[in-house]
Image 1 (tube, rainbow, N blue to C red):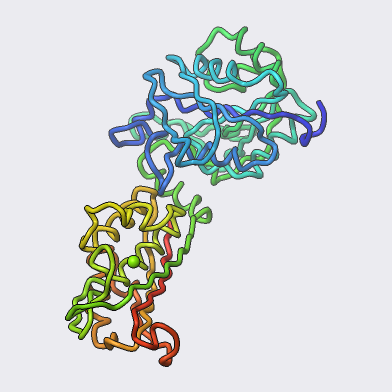
Image 2: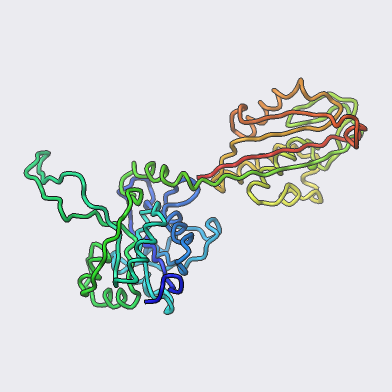
Length: 384
Ligand code: MG
């Protein structure tokens, strides 16, 4: 084998199982931890690794796919698995392109696999035909029956096996071809074909999601990968005829009104744009074209609610809004608590996470001359 940098390495993520022991209506690889499914977190772990050049996801035999290409922003090949684990792995291996010299086979149910564990497996493959992570058993081992200890088991030389299990591509292809089936894992298949498998240190955080409580443990390990986004918004509306303005959903009596294709709520428009900005989802004009007559005179909370729902759909929570209205008149100060309450209701977040403030522009510029109201806002969104 050549060095790891010139090697082409594929990762086969096995997500074909029923996985109903973890609880819930759907198999565990389809269940979400934060914004991604368990299978998607596993794909991400390998996609981020610089030595992995190809990703194959082995999906359940019913044709369902536990990962979404668009949500992930990753390229991967999907194949349909078989009735047993080794049939599924065989399908996955068959989808790996010819040029790959090594294949890492990973259980999708281990979404927290650290990069350093993948490193160790890959490094060991320059010396051995097979390598897999494991942890020595440190707890005392007993035998038991009917809630009673019946004996003590020697734990020396015992390991808890993890994945990814890595192999030279040709060797594992041949080993799977020759194997009769019903193996616990790929190390068993490889050893049956006479391959030697090196044990590299695994990691406690590379846990396998088995029971319902494992989702919370996995979420805790995945938290440092939190996605924090900020977006900014800016909008201006000019004054025209009228006897009130609507700012951040609150009607304020004034000698003039604001002009615009909707209700001209410059505050809500700006906050909406800040949320779209954080999501990299364009702007308000793109989602609600001014040329479309149905938005004529529309209440602007429709726009804000759309942005809020889009954030939820993408797995994000809006954690903070900071909004500054810029005008000489009307006076904003007396209305800010009502505005925060209104925004809290619309965004479904506590008012303590919403700031509304105002400034004048010292009688300078168009806001200073009282020609219109400007607004700027920052939105912070967080997703696990
Ligand atoms: Mg506007």
